[in-house]
Every structure is written in C-alpha cells, then in structure tokens.
Image 1: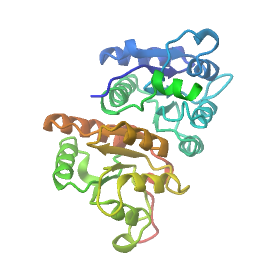
Image 2: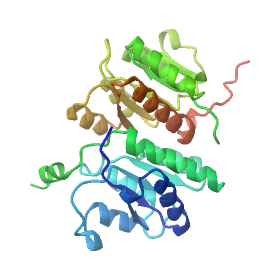
Image 3: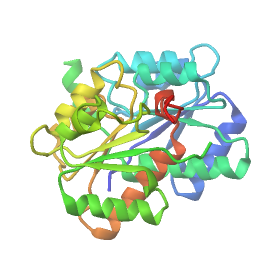
Length: 155
Length: 154
C-alpha cells in the first residue's frame, strides 16, 4: 500500500470543501487534507511562499482542484504545475460542477491526471468523493517528490 | 453520468489478466473490457492496424498497462501514447509488479495518469482492481473521444 503524504484540496466553495472533508472523514483521510481557496493560494502552497513559506518540504500525493476559481483558475494552476519539472509529476484531479467538453479537452491536454464532475445529489457526491479519495490514497502509488528530490533540483 | 466505459487491459500474464477480469466481473465492470497481451497489440489497437483495422472509432476510457511485456514494453507504449496529440488524452494507468523508483519516476515523467503496484496477495489484488475499475470506468470523466458515438455504420 502506498504511503500517503498530503492531499491538496483547491476549492473556493466553502460548502463543497466541507462536503469533501466530511466524505474524507468517513474514510480516515480528512487529517491528510490541506485546503486552499484559490489558484494563488495553491501555487503559494506548492512553491512554499507567502503564508506557506514554513510548510514542510515535499509535494502532496495528489491535488484535487476545482476549475472555476477567483484570481487564478484551476487550468492555469495545472498549466504551471505541468510545465515545472519539480511539480509536473504530482497527480492532479480536476473536480468541476459541470461537464464541459472544452474544459475536459483542455484539462487533459494540459496534463490533468483525472477529471470528475461534482454530483448534484448530496449522497452521490459524498460516495464519489470517498471513492476517488480512496483511489489516490490507497491504490495509486504517488511519485517520489519528497525532500530529497526537491534538494536535488535546487542545488 | 454513470455509464460504463471501455477498459483496455494490456498484460502478458494470463493469470493476472484472469484475476483482473474476475475482479471487474464482481463489480459488474467487465462487460466492456478488451484484453491484449503485449505492447504491439496495444499499439495496433490504438492505431487501428492489423486485426484491429476495422474496430469502432471510440477510444477506451482507460488503458491499464503492464510494464514488462514481450515485443513492445509498457514504457514504450506509454511514450507513444503521450507523445501523440491524438492519443495523449486517453488515461493510462500503469499496473506493474515493479516497485522500482526508476520505473515510477519514468512513468510519471512520460505522463502516466496513475501508477498501481500489483499487490502480491490475491484478495488485495482483487480489491485494488475493483477500486481502479470503479475510479476509471465509472467516476472519471474521460476525454470526449472515449464516449460511445455512432460510427455511421449499420
């Protein structure tokens, strides 16, 4: 079984973020989640700058990210991550409220690892989030992206 | 949308393929699985060559790809898929017995969507395969090319 580091949740909707955290609570993943509210915060977290300058080194095991967000949107964060050798291996799952072909095509083109549509039905949404959390946490083997890897690149 | 989508399984081990199919069957996910035995067959399928020259034009929702295979190995198949603009959107899950960090890094660098180490224990293998199947064939929204669409034929 893979050893899970952190799950980065990038979501501007307080309600949706709470639902995700509640769903993860049921499968023991909630303590692993770091929640940030838009693309600017996501990039600050990943690059350990600003309010996140003090977070421990090492990449999250997966990034679960909304597309439509204020300031910097999810597709732009994805684009920047996949263009940076230090971040490009981190799996990114886009989670959006509507299935739009344009976002879907663009997301995969930019290198999104997976793409889920938020269910409107509350119970379905919780089930879906639990299962996708379990896949990334317990089935997928995350890329090595800990301290050593970052050190190698910055020296 | 919870419609079932096609899974392409590429594995030279008959035993692993049978276990995978059994696991998917238990979760009612096996009705649209295509099992291929090596990388050459996988590329023939994707490029509609040889025995697959007349297959329908919809793409699989996920390719579950073993690494060590005869003729063309999984890493080479992954490389070709992810460097072809027409194929690169198709999700690929590397599923291998390799725990080597080198394989893990190379797979992610080439653009694999996920990497699953085959559990040695039978029940754990079945469980992992089920979760993988549910994730990629039910929950994940594949690129539009993966959805069934009329081919124009009868």
